[in-house]
Image 1 (cartoon, rainbow, N blue to C red):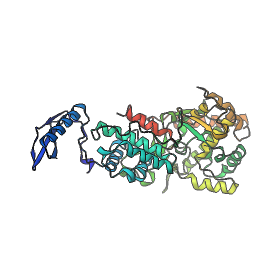
Image 2: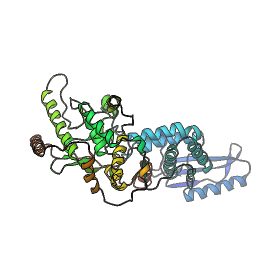
Image 3: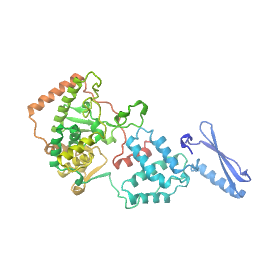
Image 4: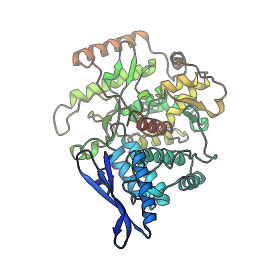
Length: 465
């Protein structure tokens, strides 16, 4: 059954015929009447005795009266989940490309192989228990994602009269699936760099093409997609603040035919969560590097005003020498080469954020403050060997800046030189009229941390309705 051709809408009235003979046996017909006056007729037949047909008729009338009547009883779970993902979740402005791909992979690779051929109307708690148990035996995070998908999709199915009751109600994950309270994000210290290694990496990267990416990741804890989306207009040069208000990625809601192929994953989209929209203090070293990078930006802009490749003045701090934005995967090759050259152990680029968190927490910066700085206002960051040392204290982000000034790997810059560079930047900003901040929509969600699964569910079951 092609669900895209079905108009999933609530009926406003109904009519149930008396029991009659249908193809030699007893049965009855249900006529559903919709708001626009259109009708759908469903036939219930095949009963050997009239009393059986009357009993079934009374049961159907009860379902119609209580709103539990299933309009389309033959829809398969696999078909429904594909429809729900493509026609319900994907069009929502709150659903991002990363979330879409993550949900799609879970549905196609884990849920459909086990439940796909079942009729949606026959799906029960036993089927779900079996699914979650199998996933829990093989994976760590997949069971939680599968549960979120099933809970949210079945809520929609119930709302559209595709199931008589929500089969997910009171179905919990197996006990072996770890439970995290308050969206705890666990960081393994062994998978981060020490302060000495951070200093080496910062020094070695100065002549590389990804120095600024490393600066933002290691010294401010930004995500890769946030780093690529940072613009000079996001910098408050007077108060030394950085506004994180966009990221670069794939926009599900843009017509792909209107986007060049090489720009599909470089579109400006909302940050990961509402908490990801934040304003951060810029440490002295980072501020100095931003000023230096702006000099290179202006130099490239002035010397590439004509010819085959013209400079694109898009205002990105981390960009090519022609002003073009970087892709999320751009840093990988350069990053790997840099680590090999320096003889540093490989850790994923994303773990540089974890390095930032670890250095802060090892110097007694509170978990809650670290979480807010990293854009996880509803989370608590824990580092494995330091998890017991901290207490949750509200509104303590200000503790971070004093420590940052001490641990960041740089020698103090001459005060007069910094003032001159600062003044130069102010003059440049006024000349180019870049002082105003971009107006970027703020909203939900992009999946890369466990916290988003509950956020998506919360949004859909709440304001998303």
